[in-house]
Image: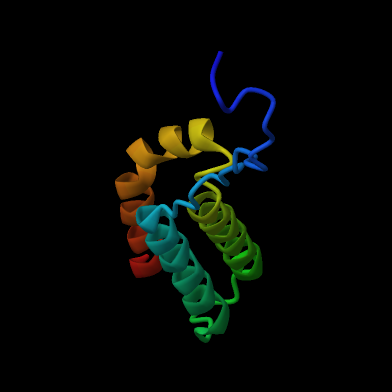
Amino acid sequence: MSSLDGVDSGYLPRATAPARRLWPGGLAVGALWFGAAALVHFWPDADDWSYTDGLAGLEAALGSLLLLAGLSETWLPGPVRRLRHGAPWLAVLALLLTVW
């Protein structure tokens, strides 16, 4: 029998919170999509094309999703892991739509 049997040490194991991890690539690509949306929205129309605001809204929505994914890697590791593979192509697509 140990000399500490029956003695309450007052030690409770500390619950550790998961370390908040950011996905910098998702934050960068999300910001790139927001930049593309701002450029499409605020650039004066060369033609009378009625879908410009819709394209800007779609780009802003995609930028929002990517920024949320960049901030929520700790809570949604599966979807963020799948998005990591497509992030470079999403950046290229944002640049191509901006140039177009």
